Picture 1 (cartoon, rainbow, N blue to C red):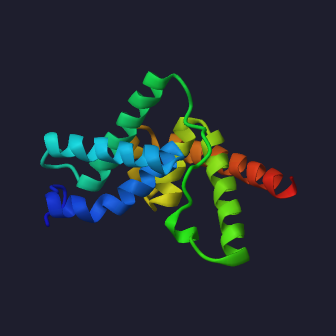
Picture 2 (picture 1 turned 135 degrees about the vertical axis):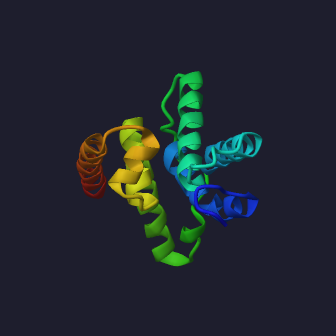
Picture 3 (picture 1 turned 60 degrees about the vertical axis):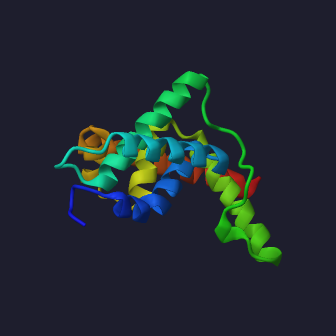
Length: 165
């Protein structure tokens, strides 16, 4: 595979990361799968320009589709999750505790403003550098750092409140 130009095999390799990103934006597996399908459809219909790295282009397309969806719904995607993550499908107390923590993190992520949630998803979940996230979002690196800092502070407060409740 060539860097910057993805084929269908490269896209297939990126699907798990795309699904995770979609979930971090939407907060539900159902909506995440719908968003992922719309993103893949758009990528297959209109491939990225030659000089673009497929992963970066994919996340940008996904984010733009989600923003359009949020605008059309006129509501924030702050609904409770319907399905447990595959990783939390264990038995006993550990599974219950994992599910509770997952729900707390998910609710806290959903409480973030969209611009902060996208930055957290790209940097903390997907592991992109500040510079890469800034390029994908078309914003200055300082803005990425500021949004991430505010989001981390808000998440810490929300999770601390959830633990004491």
